[in-house]
Length: 232
Image (cartoon, rainbow, N blue to C red):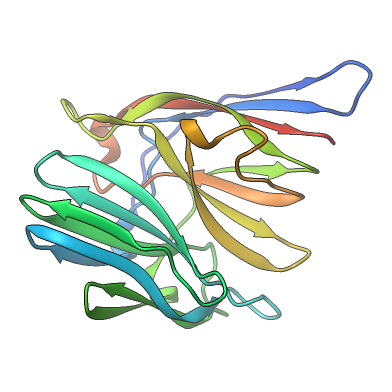
């Protein structure tokens, strides 16, 4: 896979008299994982319903089975990318309901730096058609921004936007992959400005990879300033 060079800025602030830490890092617009390995499905004009079916993906020996996928939707008419994370909860999946007047495409994938010991698959349902996602659909995380989230961590700042090409509308969201080494579990989330703070996603001694995906990152622009708070 081919990736463009990306620069990151990371700063830390420790609150006096406590172990609280505020870490801020910047994800540049040209940070993008190559989605060449993703499952890609062209979507015809009209309405579509997308959800997970059955299955699990195992990221190595002794790992819990993961029932989580990252999904990117692109709308041809608006040229907008929308990011989603689908996960099964008690065997049930949320449904992504979309309408595309001129059609678009979907990419579904996982992210892993070594797939040699992976096994299993997840079924992705698009309308009434099933598709399999497995380790062959893993993206290389080389250019993801990697950071450790300590005790009681959450995102407290999410500022900026990314543009995937000149003249394209900006988006204010990115993926995060969470790996908990104690439980040996992996799951995916989408970070948005309206879902941060203490009421947002919680992290607790997790390894986090922040990323977006794009086939041609050379003309991307913009950046996201992300702040991570933890009590250790």
